[in-house]
Length: 266
Image (cartoon, rainbow, N blue to C red; front, top):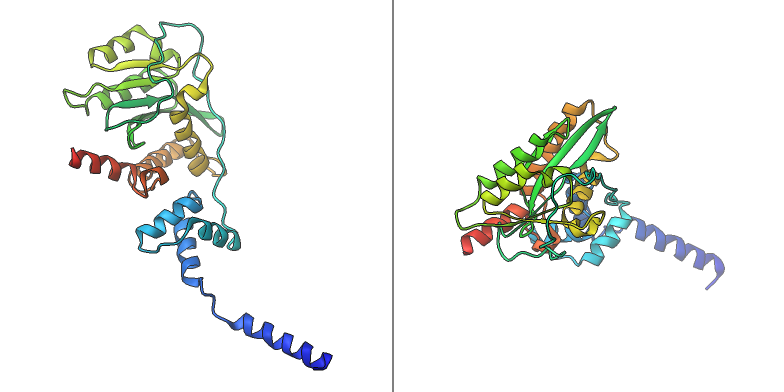
């Protein structure tokens, strides 16, 4: 075979490859659809689960490779706000001891406060998270970190408990959780209060993880017109987080699906 024939054969081979249909075209299209539907919040493992829920059994490593080919990369997580303001009120023991696993709904709750800044105006979010499914049981948003932010959230969460439910409630040593009136309200409602050691954010890693996810997926690299605009978007995101965002550790279920499944099975 002459060099010219070889060059010609190589040329025609590459021409055929260019017009050859992409065997993964359908999968790629679905990956792009899921990725953009969830606004870049899903990484390859969660997309693999979402595909499985649609009846497409694709290995997560293949999804990772295809996402690289499509230049799709999920968002990265940020840092935290510290609500500790010194030795006000009384701290309590750390009952949770970094055991963030729960056997049933309303067995272990965690809470914290995080801060946002929109054009110089601050916004505060106080959520209460159930460690069984990771769902946000109750939350409050305000433009100031007043006591009512936490108090109203607690009242809302407590109103959802059955008579025999007495969860451990874990927080950091923020001033709100140390106040006698808050501690009395929690105790009278049957909650067992637990606190992280001072300055040790890993003791409340579950709450920190939620804030990291939320700020990565809906706050950082997004523009907001005002504090009110951000408050509306946080409301929308928490609804999405509870009812639409599947979790790998819940085997492809959303937090509310996982919670309801456990309640029906009880």
